[in-house]
Image 1 (cartoon, rainbow, N blue to C red):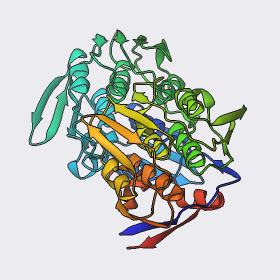
Image 2: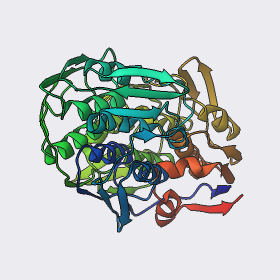
Image 3: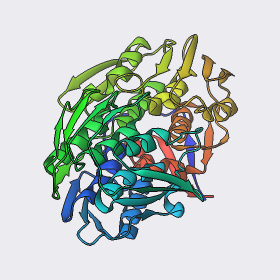
Length: 417
């Protein structure tokens, strides 16, 4: 088992290049199944989740090749319509193949999903959407069985915003007979990116970037090529790394519009920014001010940056409250931050954080992807040595994060446990 060893207290400087967005790439990989042919995705990082999705596509029958940050996917000879437990239990995004498999083969067998242990995340919204299109759904022995002789356009209203359910619904609607309207659809940049790719495949979609989508099904889609958008969560993590270490750095290849909710909160905490094209330079505060956050669907504050922002608030001059309504159980990093001498108390899904003057290095354990990033940030700012175990979590979503941090001047190394 690999670990990170961090000697904290070092200032960062220089620039860091942001990789392609994992949460945009995974659903796009899934929708390549909708058409026969060779698709190409560019600006694709080497991440464990992308390796896992590639493995799943190969099981289904696709040929997947990765070279020089490009992913070539040939779906010409796919014939298997099952996503097995061994894959889906390790990566929740595997549920994204449910809609494409149902649309292409008229049937799908997909294991109930796993992934990060951050509380119960049911798939009922996905299944209700599939039923609206005319699919029959059965759950048996831990698998979702979906089948439809003909998929027909439908009016779908999501009772709450769900990125994954929106993605699955869109992937069926683009080839369902007739027209589909989706109300209360998620509007994340990753959804917009998937729509852009589907339009390149020949889909007819109106309302991109809004919560009301109108989709006219087409008889046939074709393969496509596209550059993947930069990862807003990785960009946000590096901005917060600069803030917590009180360092000036430039984050390159990112879309500032995707980070507005974070930038606004960081400005309230005292940081200043200069934005030029796809680059963001951060000028950190000498005194970190306490700021409350409340996670919401995009364009609100992202739950995927909650843990990292909480790490910043452990060194604020005062008390802040961090509330997560999207994943109320997503606070397992709190127990580990306490080991670094943070002062945090929990009340259900609200963390009250009293800033301390100094964090102290300790041995801690990563519990999920974004908690891992929070521990890395805290370790960078802490006095002394921090050892983070179970770092395989962070490799799911950050490409060589220790190498990028080293380039900025951090004292961090990956060692065998």
